[in-house]
Length: 190
Image 1 (cartoon, rainbow, N blue to C red):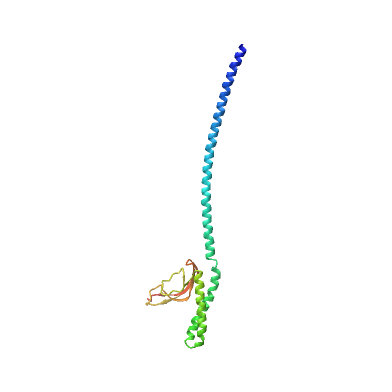
Image 2 (cartoon, one colour; image 1 turned 180 degrees about the horizontal axis):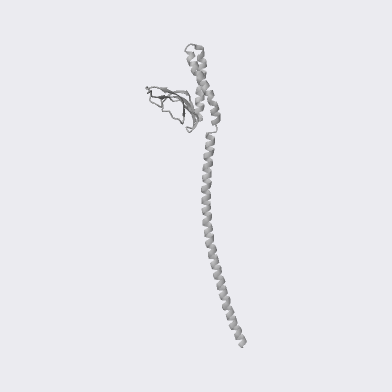
């Protein structure tokens, strides 16, 4: 009987030990689960932050590339236009010469009209591509768009004014100088 009672006590001890072990296992599992849930939430927050940062970076890159493409399209014809400018100059010089000659000879009038028509077409072409001609007189000299070729001493005009445009300049989209205007600048006589 003692033996049976000892077994019962032993069994109770084993049950208590098993209960404590189960309780400890449960607490460990619970703590581990809470720890993992906290880490999961932190990881989710980090992922959301990374997604936001990545989205901002993508938008910045997208905007920068759009600006670069726009700029490339806007100024893609620059070299062609620069090479085209001497042709325009020659036509304008021919027009001026024919206008002087036509005063005395009438058979140049047909040529004069055709050259004027070509000049008008070129002006339309320039307007379509955003090319502005720099050929104003009696305006203030601006070294960023004018190239002074000579000085005209006079007291009739304020100093630093454009007196004559020897060769017009051209600017593309009002921001990029294709060629400065060659000008004569006024200066007060002393």
